[in-house]
Structure formats: C-alpha cells, structure tokens
Image (cartoon, rainbow, N blue to C red; front, side):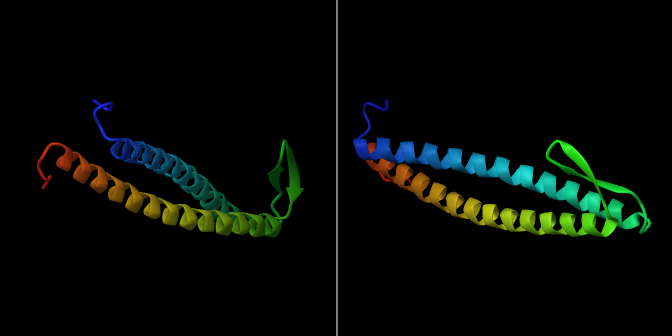
Length: 121
C-alpha cells in the first residue's frame, strides 16, 4: 500500500514514526528521572531522621566515602534540584513532541482522506 502513496505522504508517515520514537524515548527518560528523584527524596527523608553524629557514607563511583550527615544532605539536595530541572526540561520536550505528533497525524489523515477522493471528517 505504501507504494501507492505519494512521496509527500510517505515522508509524513516517516516523520510521524520518528516523532513517535522520540516520544517513547522521552517517556522512558522521564520515568527513569522520576524514579531516581523518588529515591533521592527517600534518602533525604532517612538522612534527616538520623542523629547529627551518625556515621554516613555516600557512593562515589565504585567507592563509598565517609561523610557528615550535613554534607550528605547538601549533596542530595543538589542532586534533587538537578533532577527536578531535568524533569521539567523533559516535560517541555514531551509537550513539544506531542504537539508535533498531533500536527503530523492530522496532516496524514487529511492527505489520506484526499487520496481516497473524499475529505476525512
């Protein structure tokens, strides 16, 4: 059937698939960041419940380094802020990709409607 479609419609369909893949990739990234953000928030909650002189370790690469509770809280809050900003950025990208997908989908519907000799409603 695709050989019967004009090149313009084939191009629009290819773009539609590409945008759909972008949306899926962004959704996966967003999910990963949301999970990491939740883990960071849980770690912060646990840290804040510890006494001030508690022994705390944080992971750096393959190592765990002893640190103070306050330093660990500062690092986690920085990470939390970075993740929140990244999440906002991905959400904006997701919104743009979704709009683009809807535009392309409408263009393809219109092109397919006119191909059949009638206008799609």
